[in-house]
Amino acid sequence: MTKFKHIVSIILIFCSFMSIAANSSQDKKVPNEINVGLATGDAKVLSTYFNQNVELVVLDNDNVYSKAQAQQIVTNFFSKFPPIEKNAFSIIHDSGKENAQYVIGKLKTEKGDFRVYFLLKQNDGKQYIHQLRIEQQ
Image 1: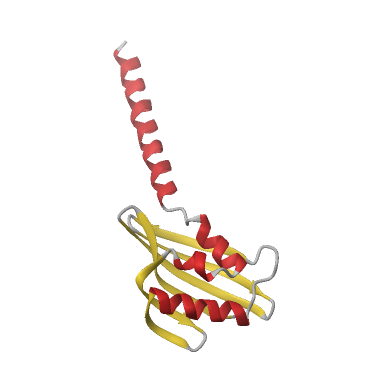
Image 2: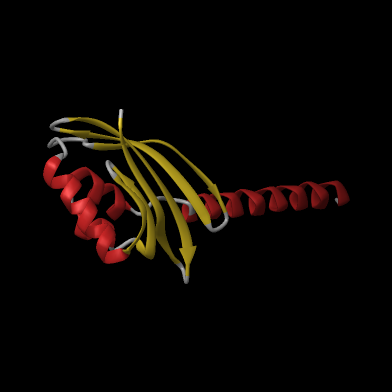
């Protein structure tokens, strides 16, 4: 009988660890609105995830900008390089730890492909973009 209790205890501990691992991986999920904003070229949707100041590298713009300035720069980028109609943005790699996550993706536009990098940090339960890079491949 004690062997049975021991086995049940081990199974319960294992299930608890699996549950914790599943929940932590869900917390690291990139908000879908960010993917949609990049795929559709909607800087307004994307900017809802910008931190108050964003480190931005987009074409000739390389600086720390306010949320409003960053939105304008990204709007200008999308007006010059509109995304293709289907599957314009895809995530190549993402990783991170507790309150920070980075994403590397590919953006297909009508005028060529771009590599997209962004860093998300969690603050007050919401993820914010702290860094965004859009570089021509």
